Image (cartoon, rainbow, N blue to C red):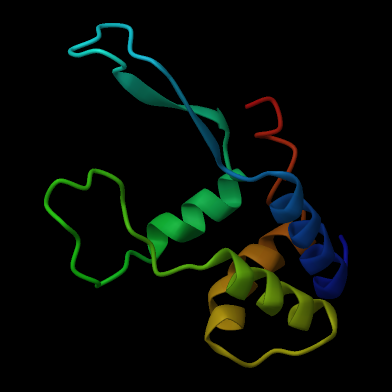
Length: 117
């Protein structure tokens, strides 16, 4: 078992090491000249994807947009994790992150599960 502060540091490292990267490649079934599709090259850490999925934004989304809009922001998440690593325990993002940090500290979350993806 590790401390809450150490668990927050591990989550910071995980978030900084894995980031969504998408590139454009020629479409397998082109519908017009120059048709390209997006391909995921690297994904965010599983715990961060789950967090984003848990907090869907209430902002109005254009009907043609297929991706999910999240209320979670990477910079705010990193800031909150840094505060947790320094012993702070108050604030909206900290409240949202503490269950994840606690699971990691107790050994219930494996950050290395999704490193092969």
